[in-house]
Image 1: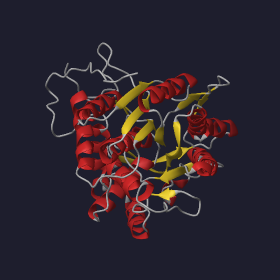
Image 2 (image 1 turned 60 degrees about the vertical axis):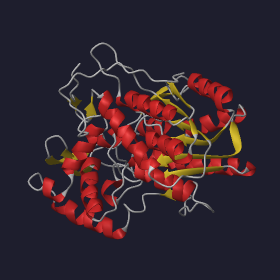
Image 3 (image 1 turned 90 degrees about the vertical axis):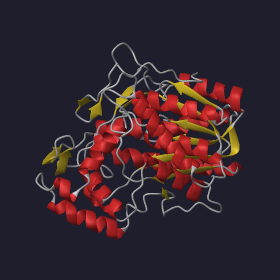
Image 4 (image 1 turned 45 degrees about the vertical axis):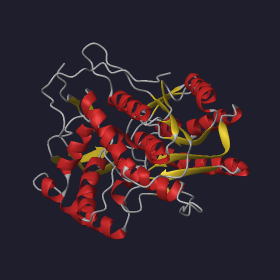
Length: 396
């Protein structure tokens, strides 16, 4: 079938298998072209099919030579519907890992469930024995609690009052003002339940109790802080409350794991184009301006560059891992340089529909958004027939 991008708001409802495979291969080649990472031998990546999770799995496998297990919730092609991008990404990863002689296994299902945790533990025990790295990179709008059965839904809202700021329709380039009503207490509670640290802690407890986590294991989860421009809707909003819970969980886990030589970290990463970030008002416009500034200064990084730097310089760089006053790794350090943020703020103040393409890298943002789904790679004939039904090797 001929596969073209179809969008609905900030969602692309189609994905291209060949384009996704090329994107994965480019990340693999980037890592293979860098010095080896001396660290993990067996890694578990929870949320492994896109974005930072996929990049983490690629760095672990092709940077450190690690065997990997990826857990993710993606769908295969069905009828006239393509598979999700994460499905195609994972199929490409599994093929590349097999060619490199690395063990890799994919577990598809709800990472929040006890069933998937049990299946993962069984796979670790049977295939790897133990894992020494656990990356938690789950991004989901909903979570059903495995013990109570309650289903929570997250929201992206400010706290305390209505928030208004500039935003952009990255498909049309229209800059407008977006106003978001404040969250209720129950919406905050549910967002924390979905995006906080409880499930991460459940994973680590389950792995330790089952004896499939090495005593000196490292675990890392990802967060974002960002600039003052986005704070009201992000860091000081419902998502921020959830991330505070995640960071508190990281400190608790570190206290527990350090007793046997293990470590737990929360890494603060750079703002990047993801399907999740595309859904947050204000953020796509901020990222577009940030990209312009960082690219002009030669400091721009994508997911794979960020994760390679995290693994090679921080997690496994030798010596003690540098953290901030709250115990967080700051791999967003280039983004948050004062001179970068000062220039972003100057451009932000002048932004309008008329000048958005001149004052930001909105075209680059739009291109990266479609690349998430295998489009606009520059190496695929999108008018040619493609086979949407792609199998994933080593699927459990």
